[in-house]
Length: 119
Image 1 (cartoon, rainbow, N blue to C red):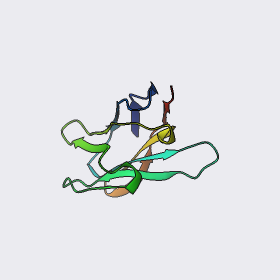
Image 2: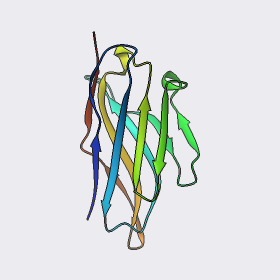
Image 3: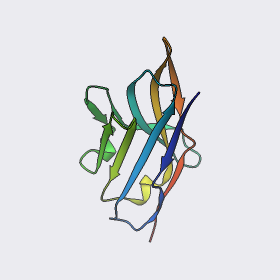
Image 4: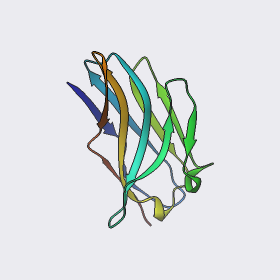
């Protein structure tokens, strides 16, 4: 069994920073792409940033230059450093990872962590 556990969400003022973490644990053979998604009330879940096992990254346009995704493969952990936060960044943030268990690739999700940007 595999789990993704997120941490680091909270309430921050506009212009502030937060760092999200997501650690994978369990019977992991390897982890492919890891990503962060977010879902605001009344809106669809959207991709925020992704990073491959080789370190290639991509970001949605609205967070480019403000957010940085990184990963520590030794710790099976992905991070999202969020700077210059805006009220429109308010959402539940979800970690996602493609994880090989035995010989099969599965798609896993974390439980979500709330990020609220407000004065």
